[in-house]
Amino acid sequence: MRRLRKFGRLLLAMLREIGDENAYQRHLAAHGREHSGAEWRRFSEERMRAKYARAKCC
Amino acid sequence: MPVAVFMGLYLRYWRPGKVLECSAIGFLLVLASIFGGRAVAASASLAPVFTLSAMALAIGIIVYGFLASALPVWLLLAPRDYLSTFVKLGVVCMLAVGILVVRPHLQLPAFTRFVDGTGPIFAGKIFPFCFITIACGAVSGFHSLISSGTTPKMIAKEWHSVPVGYGSMLLESFVAIMAMIAACVLQPGVYFAVNSPAGVVGASPAAAVATISNWGFPVTAATMAQLASDVGEKTLFFRTGGAPSLALGMAHIFASSGGSALIGFWYHFAIMFEALFILTIIDAGTRVGRFMLQDLLSHVVPPLGRMTWMPGVILTSAMVVAGWGYFLIQGVRDPLGGINSLWPLFGISNQLLAGIALCVATTILLKMHGAKFVCITFAPLVWLVTVTFAAGWQKIFSPLPAVGFLAQAERLAAAPATAATQTLIFNARLDAAVCGVLMVLVAAILLDSVRVWYGILRGTADRRVSETPFVLSRLQVEEL
Image (cartoon, rainbow over all chains, first blue to last red; front, side):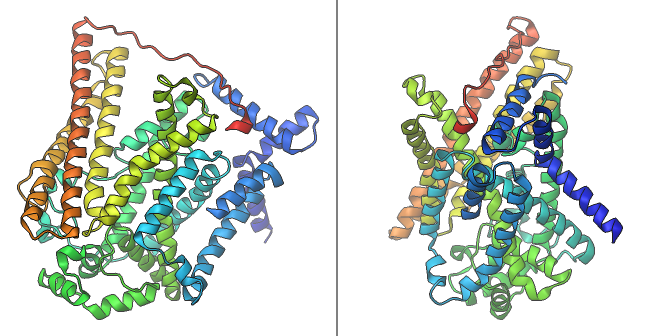
């Protein structure tokens, strides 16, 4: 049962990573901000801009 | 679609950032709608509301394509595609496990008598028509133009396109192999009864089973009636297009691996799974077509180039939808079934488009590396052009009415004139014209490419490779 819970937690962490939720939490912590709809949009936009601004290299 | 709109609004306004929560709700709602569908089908008052004619369905699809193109992407297209990804991946994994568990016996022989080109479902010889197929994992003009709905999300750097692109091809090919297994586990007689049009095997179930049994593939009306009853359909005769037979095969595998009582559920689940692929082509294809048309028309009417100018968005969406919607309506009106006229054109145009993509790739390789790597794209281009042009030529000019559009129109013109034959004649001539135009356009691009390649290899053409510099989007997140 303990292993199953551990696997469940791992799966949830992976899904959170895929769904950008962990990255968003890191963003909130790094900027010392609270969650809000506007903050999520700002985070999404920043990620998109950063992604396409350095599309060519590593 | 209502579930997708709900998810779009949920993430946009109600719970922004709660991606997992929204995904779980969306997935549960989809499952609930499939289970609830059985109750709707059994309801005397609700069933007629949701039982639509072919024309009503075609119009519904056209309206959906327009909405997916004109509405903000976060409201319908993105959540619909996102939700579909989970369903698709889930079904593919389940099917793979199901096949391994059941290890079904393939019923269809490797070759049938129809290798001579007289097949009831698709007439034409193995070469070239075996290679005229919508095989996204092998070659696809559609995907060479727009990749996939989720590719931009996965590719952050240029080199990511190598594992993502190749991985997508492998996964698509994996799906294709399993789809073939699912279709081949059906009894051949059942397979032909489901897929053959009434115009070929006879308009009544008794005539159809007699024709198919005479071909050497025994099937009875009672077997077909039992199958239809098991999966909750009124009939499974003349269900051309491949989707119902594939769904039957998939349902058979799922039911055999445990849960035979749920064969009706699995059948409708598989139908929905297949519809998701079609919806992706419709919504992503229409939206990309709209962007291209806006870009093209902006040279004449500059405001049309603004992606957020609603009159332009609505006008170009309507134009793109009208373009493919016309053929869909014509297909629905076709007495032999739309698949008869639409499928060959779909395959030929998709592969001609892939030929254009290979021309462009060959030019880039020649410019960047000379003749060193050119065979990577040139060899498949030669094969693709040979196969597609051979198929296109045969579809237009073959003297066999079952193969050639013009021969088919000529034979029908000699028959007594009815509304149905007039429609068939018009469709056959229209198909021939469209096929011819596509071939001429691709031939022009091919000839021009050959001219450029010749110049590059002789050193008389410019070998510089230019790339449009990066321009930051002026769109805000709210406008996307």
